[in-house]
Length: 251
Image 1 (cartoon, rainbow, N blue to C red):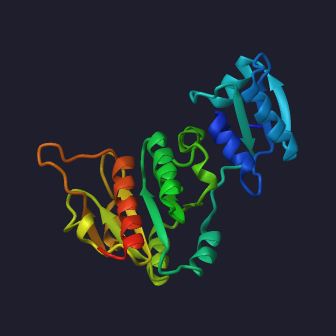
Image 2 (cartoon, one colour):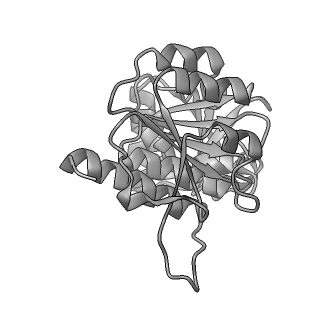
């Protein structure tokens, strides 16, 4: 175990990673005093998938998990399960008319990042893209909240932000900014093509650079006296509206 390890904390996150293909977890640390059936089944799964199992005490688990609730089980990955710029460019060569991407433009709270990834996975999004030098990033806390969603879609953490956004557009992906200032309701906008839905940070929204590259802006209609939604909730609304349109064939 080294300081370069990235941790997955909690039963659901660890089990989902163990069932992914390929298995990225290299080692599991569990609290030795816990001997119930749930932990026994999870450790048996880990061994069956060739993952090293290490017994530890509460202090070791807490040092690995930090402030994240670990439930007596921590999985270690050699690095965060995020891909970089070259992998993104290769992936964009396979964009189709159904490609659905979520862009997280500098979110500051790792819990919101994790919630957005989890929601993206539930909606069947193909990828999540976030900047590598702005915002909280793919921290252990974000991965814990994602509860295995990190292993159900592509996650790209990239620099050269302007270049990335331009490359998405050249690949035929529409960049749709979301926010209260949007010109059209998300329920009236055609989301059936290859689109990347962009959500901005909790405090400042989308950065000017990102806003400059957006092809259009959409909003979630809400009561005028309570118009602000949590960023992960907003991401869920627009993602599932895109899913609804694609299934029904109607705007």
